[in-house]
Length: 245
Image: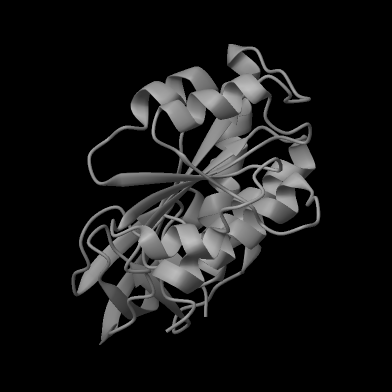
């Protein structure tokens, strides 16, 4: 059943407008009597019936409230250094599916791609659309924000927020495993930092550790950046979130 996110609170009758209304009317060719699942700003979920159509809106009537919270107890943010466009698209999509609550695109020294301000906002907007569609597809009860692209230096300056633990996957780390590191952490807000195709420079790794980041290895093999993101998110959710429950 199609899932929609509604900017407001569920009521007996609501009106869906904008791109979602266009999709229902002109892509899905929806008819009165068909149903959708709607999630509101508070995470409340309802099964709703389409009862009326106008050129600009679809009117929905609430048929049943659903107990359908699918969010992880862990606040998990992926800080992903920029990858080539198609790889970044995949990482954003899979991060949402794996329960990330936010995605932070990071600009670092070895990033292959370079964006000016206009292109950076265009890419962020694209990633946000991918994140929104992924949230609908996998049954999330909350949308995932894709933040504006930031430099690694600004990330390090901001990462010492109280209650936040930063775990970064580093190919030169030989001792500390992700599992061992995570078992030591008590916080419920974890930022997972993944490097670009070319990895972190020594200076960048030292800067992250100096700011309080925990360096971990994902094993003896060198993983592609997009693989490391998916593996890292899965490990964190298994150890601290809801994949291991």
